[in-house]
Length: 256
Image (cartoon, rainbow, N blue to C red; front, side, top):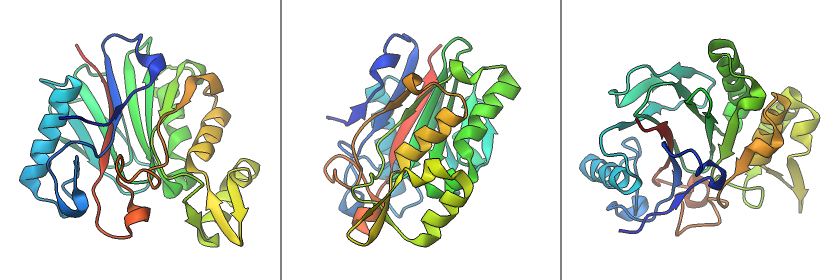
């Protein structure tokens, strides 16, 4: 079975780091969830979702460990995962861990999945950062926590921004654009485009700018994958479907 599995080329040198941005290709789900849907919360058959997760884990080489997910709520709550045997870490939109064989997962269908790695300390983290997460400041909060709780300097952190809806497709109203500009100022303004009387937001560019402002070097921030809305064969997109659809997973962890 062929899967869409995008990786960060610069991370291939970390031999025991397993990571990836999965798409919808492969999997056994049907209907609006067709392909590799890995969410139990969108109305898909739970048994099929479990089979999708199992097949995907085998394909990427996670044979013993679990992929740990959260109940994502579009906020800034970050969970410290210390037990690699749990399946779900609770409510939140970010996780970090220093545990081996603990693979952290983010589910998305347009929002930006961000994977973090501190290679010297062997710590990984994930963040779910759509416009609400950006407004809440979850990505720079993760950088601050890695520094304050683990002694990791921001310039030692690497981050990868995965497939997400692009400014080509992500039209927003003033109720989204105005709060972002009020919170982030000029860097938000630079990520908002006006075309044909409509306003469009570049989520990945804004996340990148905020991470740079937090001290993560630009050369250590990687953009991986296309616009989810533009890629119906490869990725789920809530905005494109405007109805029920599946969720793809992005994951990272250190194998033992």
